[in-house]
Image 1 (tube, rainbow, N blue to C red):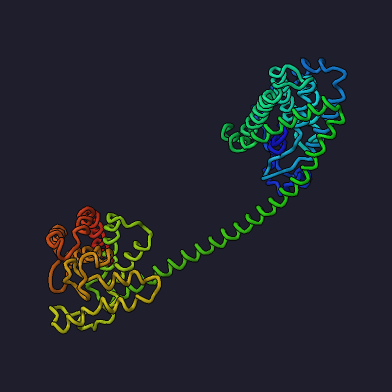
Image 2: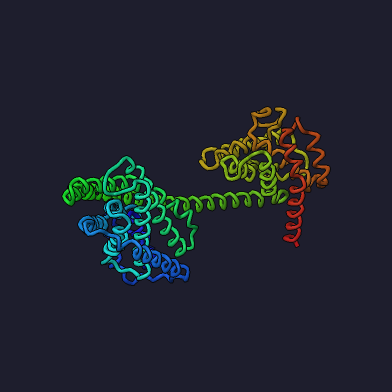
Length: 493
């Protein structure tokens, strides 16, 4: 396999996974600079594979080589030399794929001389392609055997279809397409098997990923090989040299294109790496800011609890109830709406900072004037939070947390869906926690009694959809309430 086998088997041969940094054929020099690369252990399967392939290649050599005619030697020598030059002038492209036109010359030789010439030239070309490259013996034997088997098989198929390689006929093009396809399947398949064994990868998946894209190139190279053979039949060695020069010159143009492409790709990779690094830093900073925000909010809530001992833990419990119900209200976790509901529930009573202590701590019923003062706390809380960017959504919930579904709440008398969803969910959670907590002026209700009260006020004080969500998670809310009460008693003890 002459297009990409070399690069893959180099990896297979010396065990280096170092990426190729030069796409212009400098891989061999790069490997000389890395003599200390660790050698990957070769398993028994690999040695067996190499042994079987080498034996098959020797059998082919024994069967076909003696049939090479004397007048075929000029073509053999000329095309073998051209194939070696093409292989040595190949281009390393896109990671570790080696692209060369050596297959064109070898395929032309397979047509002109049949398997007799192919079996002699293929191992010479494979050996010469890496003659100055350090590699382990089994890898070099694998390359030579693979070249032999692929090219001999292609030659046999071509002669079977076209009948002869000494005169051009109508069967040449279909014969060339079939022969180069067989060459490709054998060469790429054996490489996939060897690399799969070496790395423990699935051979079919490996072939699809790394070698299937070469099919159209092989077909084109097969047709070029047929054309090169026809040029030899028409003009002899002169025809080969004249035909071989343009592809060789194309190598330099293609090399420049690949070099520019590589430079662009590397620059993009560097920029992408910089962007990924910057994104990681931003994400880390975001997490730190979020933790700072959450810590600040918790400290503020604890300060509010310290001011009103009778409602200690209320904000945290209500926030937990709200988020439990929100999951059943199709609110996606970690979205802006989710975060706003959580923060709004925690900070719902922040406006009580503006309520005098004698009103806030009054053990009995409030007077009408005191109620007016108390009802100001949603508006005060909204004014405190609305201009803080990360709390602006929560501010709307704080502003509306005492609104009623029937429009009889305060401070704005919002009706139904005019009330933010977070505030409607909060209203149920707040009512349940308030009814199941002791107050100076009454004892706590049982959880079931509180539930019945909420159901009784569905459609008036509470949104019916939210009440349904509450009933679905009622058992979970009760368990959390009991755990919270247990923790409170342990702390008091």
